[in-house]
Length: 341
Image 1 (cartoon, helix red, strand yellow):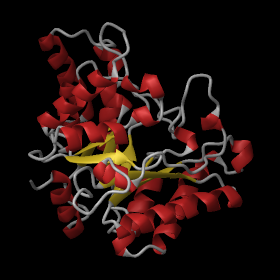
Image 2: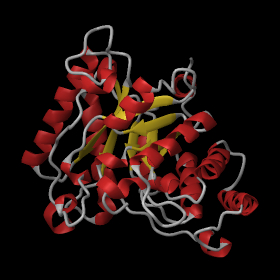
Image 3: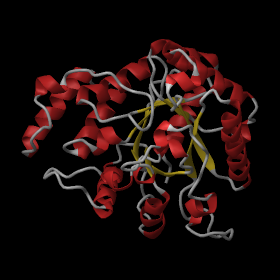
């Protein structure tokens, strides 16, 4: 079945400023947060991984997102064992690496230490849940992976990050495996990376452009995922190369207005992808939340209108909102690292 991701990327290749917008539900958090990844049910108890996966099944069935991003273990269950994507327009994807800055475990201090490259999953495991996979098995699983890098202005450490990405990229090209690239802001304290806060987005932009300049089309990421750091930095990156499809990460849960406004503003300044994990997972009713995300992304509603519509939907469903309407209409400041946002 033709995937909406492919349709939209093809359209954006022809018209980079077109209205198409790609939404992803990022439910790969079990490769970062451990038990806390699944979030909590309305009664306050943590969800089990089975309940976490059930939410994914429902979002895929709704077909309002374009990508469902999962951990390698969940993609085996949903994509290979259950085959839920075979008759769906939603593209399955899995996290292809889990560098140490996303190892966010209780009592741990890894996110505050310089990021070190690491990948639990292999491309064979993502494509087939086996290693090594034979040719008949290679496409039974997912064929799109999220690869993330973090540059900390440390030549030795950043070199190891780039070497690991190069090795992944070459293997992916050899095996016909697609990926999209996530570039985080530095995860170490300012005193260690030495970059003024206002210059960090431009440090990241230059790293992206410099890195991609050495990569031919056969090995390039299908799109980018970066923290949204304001109009100036986003417009600069999107305006540099019209063939780059730039996306933003959702960050921490925040208010409902935070989520809707992020999509609205990022699209206004050139982004054509948004990947929301905690913002969707923390919602009172995920399907309604995704529905209103889609309405904002497709220019059908303004963010404040969508917040009001979402609250009305919750009321109709008999679900208590986490916040009153006025509190949920507030905008709070986002953050740039995976650990804190």
